[in-house]
Amino acid sequence: MLHGLGYEGRVTSPTFAIANEYETPTVKVAHFDLYRILDSEALFEIGFDEYLDGSRIVLIEWSENAADVLPEAYKTVHIAYGDADNDRRITIGEVTV
Image (cartoon, rainbow, N blue to C red; front, side, top):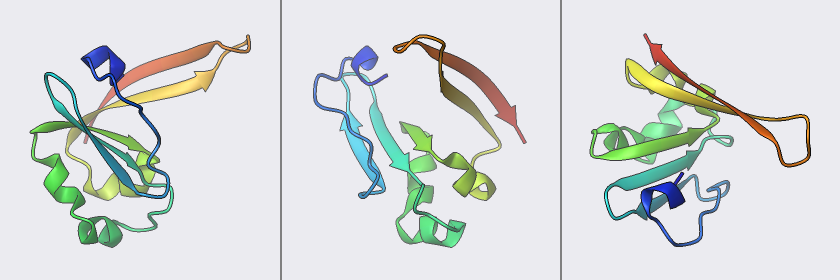
């Protein structure tokens, strides 16, 4: 996705850092991996709520670990392996609470 926004650098999952931030030519992006986050209180300790101010795209892996603090409306992207080795099935949905 970042390359599609014009970002030319290396993109990695923030598994141990919790968040990586990127600046593309058009928008800022924050990429979170919440696998290690066990409750929403831990998110507030790292300032997660400040990232939801609408000034950037926020990508979240393991978003179910933050379900109680997500905005009322958001989009989901599910990526699953396809039948062939390099095939992926991508499903985009919208959630309104």
